[in-house]
Image (cartoon, rainbow, N blue to C red; front, side, top):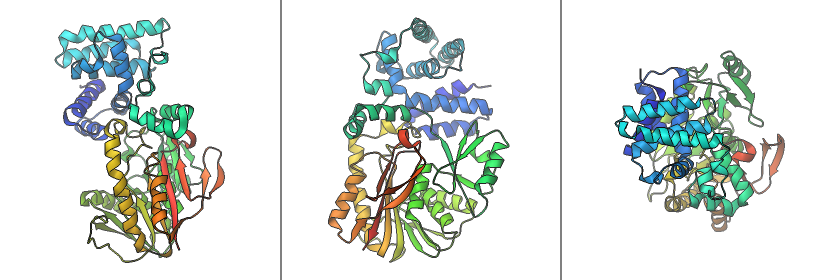
Length: 447
């Protein structure tokens, strides 16, 4: 039987050779091989963890080996990263198991002649750690090497928050995210879902301020196999994302336009808040992404959503409707608030890729604004912590659209579980403070 570590290596090699996204590489392996729940968890932890921590692991490899990590053969480098990740971050795995299985990986994947290198580097790390050496507390290590982030991103965060806040944020981005559910009130309630999940050994907690939010901890296994998924009782949605529709506050009978809707988490949330009474137009420029929304919509039993494929930034595009009461613009963004959830994003985004998003975000704001009725609401949201994509975009939009203004709203600060008035109409949710994904939400009202 093929081991979880061998499959983790194959997934990492798939990432290297095909430039696969982490989640897709892991899903391909999980779909191909029938693994026990414990092996599924180990495989996922190893792949996500190695990609998340790869700059730190490469720093250690360079310190421990006779050549820089980047000059090691790619497959050997991944095997060494797998072994080191277990030694550094997975205390529950015995040292002998981490070392011996890594040596076996080298032998099983055409690197038998280098298996002694694997054994030597891993045992040297453990020997020196047992002697009191802390490689990650060295004065020579950079912040980027310590927290496994690119230098440009650290410079961005340091410029916005300073060193102390940035280090705390970076620590948060290197841990596994919480699992939050959004309960479907048209089919059930939080108490019923909590009871079903606790019956299989999971722990649940209501999320402060979110009427449908439930946080789940424990060994969940495959999400689709949890009680209530097939019945449409709930959908996975981080607490930050749940705040978006709640702040938009759609009402029964209204007409809503969700401009960048797919895959549909916020769209279906709005439908639930409206008790599925009204009209929601779910737009996206990619039809295949709207198909995912359709699957979720059917599972949740929602009928008020109509999909529309189109690009609002293209001249001559005819929107699905002329006027709307409220609009949601969850724009394409750099995703820098979800680095814990999407570990490869830190290596994929660059200042150049982000620069291409800025005119798109402003163009979408400009395109949707005329469709909102006088007195209507437009919520702009991102899952990034880059002020150029957040506050700066809203300030630029308001400066050129005097008929719009920021509108105050309320939210519950989960840090202290107290109600706060957001007077400026703009909220930044920080993972290390609020224990949710990093998000930006702006509430705008038309005169």
